Length: 397
Ligand SMILES: Cc1ncc(COP(=O)(O)O)c(C=O)c1O
Image (cartoon, rainbow, N blue to C red):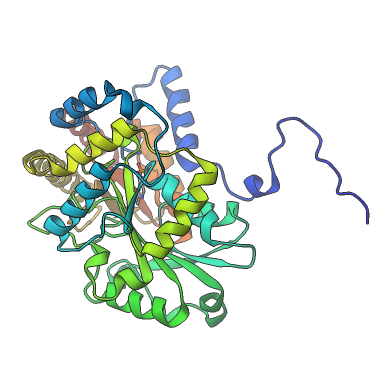
């Protein structure tokens, strides 16, 4: 048998890397940089990275933890007892979910790492991961990098942005090993529809699919809505895990602090992969994360009020320019239809060129995002007001 031809060129990527599009925000950042280099004062409403600092009590806990020599050594991938117990207590108090701190929770270096590595822990070539479309890009990039297939589940506006589980082809269900879901949802801002989790659990049981609920936004909700944990549903732990990230709820995006909770066997498999890949989450960050979860709720609630105020500001401005949107009950995003005559990309392009404001074209989140754009609420009030004013001036019909 002939030896495979070696690729030429030091920096030529692997085929698996070539198989996925460039990470979308990297491209957006590049465009904004280029505009700024031209001297244009661009306001970005693209990326969802909280603009307010990590709460003081968390920073204080980190200061203390970082000086502890014990916390400076290689962490274990199982995580510190304090971290696992803080999660168990938080899940009980916040969601009414019982978590065994010994077997049902371990740290992750952010939800992104966790979702990516779950793909490598569970997927082989020929396997399928079912992924919401539009959705967080790692639900599709992860499976492809792992040599498997991502089968897209369009989120149907008429089903409150849930996928129609009855229309998944039988052969995809047979091959599916993972199902990614996420509520409150990025990018649509929708909350979990009534009865959806129950239907997911039933499907997962029937087809032996591990459900991965990406819980990145449960703490950011509005109008009195309180988001549940997927694990609170009867039977969820038998078929699923939940990835809880502290990035958005506690303004900790840079800290890379998350956990995976739920099905003990699945967590063990993920842990086994991680012991070969990374050396765990810095223990000082684990201790700060534990302090975050045990801290007063007031800070989180105050942050929700900030986003709620910004949400109302943006929704009103969009209505003024003829874009009708339902105010979301959760997340830090507004998902809005593009005005008629535009594609997602052409609208985002026009907003950038005419108003020097960046919005994300919905198509960046998958083909079913076409026809929408996303605005992130993580811009300081003054700048957000300025952006909204520019939209009014330049885009009023
Ligand atoms: C749905 C969703 N999952 C995961 C993440 C990433 O979270 P982390 O910062 O914990 O990696 C994001 C970030 O935007 C997200 O929107």
